[in-house]
Image (cartoon, rainbow, N blue to C red):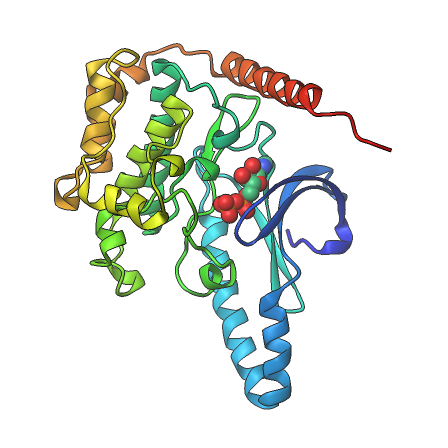
Length: 322
Ligand code: ADP
């Protein structure tokens, strides 16, 4: 079905990213709760307006071509239907900006759900969901995710774990301003060095495997493995990723199997990194197939923990002066 703004009742803000805000909305005709990605008041739009004055006719042509490219890419999103992928419901355009509606995941993203880290059986279930999702995108749709990180792994109260925000290719990515610049880089060393960054086509699946390994350590430990406070600046941090030893899961908390699995993702040489098939066949994930980890209970407890932290933060705030 098609979606437009008039059919949506806006609800609370769920988060903010590079592109804009994500809001919970109700799609009134179907009574389905959705998450809508909406652009920040658009710089792109202001630029387009300026171009309009300068190049009135060309603008229309460029705009049409660009919007058509985006519409074609959105068609791929409609085909990305798998248990490990957040469902895409549709998109609409308002004044050259894309508004994008997807399945609402009622426990949010993993970066906000695992501040205390996660036990090994939960980590294994998260890892297997992510690998199956990434493998589906690659094998069935020929898509490389290109932005694997805990913020892009969403969870719901049914205990399901799903990936979102994968790059289709050109225009949609550009218009969603996908950048990984910030104090937490999940970029593989070869991408930081720029070897495979010359054009989009050379981004290989193994760069996503690095980002997957790094995300696993962050989810496991509740902490990004190259913490900004350890480095005097971003350059020092990126140098550590390129030239330092890759991070590992700690021995005292995780089994040899779990630790080896992560090591297979975090090989500095992309050629030596494991493939998705190898990762699924590794003892760490073979064991997960018969594990009866209670993900519903884990999500419930993680949400309770998040509320407790938020309440404690409110209590320790100094009283507001009137
Ligand atoms: P980023 O640009 O950092 O990837 P996003 O703009 O995709 O971030 O999302 C910002 C935040 O909004 C996420 O961290 C997540 O908490 C929340 N969010 C995004 N999509 C959904 C969704 N489908 N359901 C629930 N929450 C979501």
